[in-house]
Length: 60
Image (cartoon, rainbow, N blue to C red; front, side):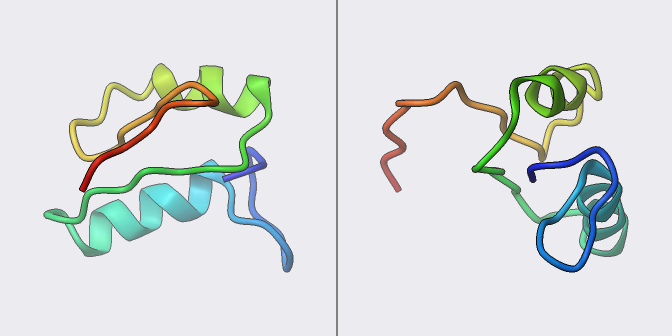
């Protein structure tokens, strides 16, 4: 989720919101984010959108 609005190469916040609407039980952990995009995504306060800082190790 690199961009605010997705394009042919990278997903954007708009694409993630569409996925969350279509699949409400899906947990999304975006990566490859710019600081601006990360900050905007944090503002969404969506339970299924897990925003971590770079370097976070996620155990599945």
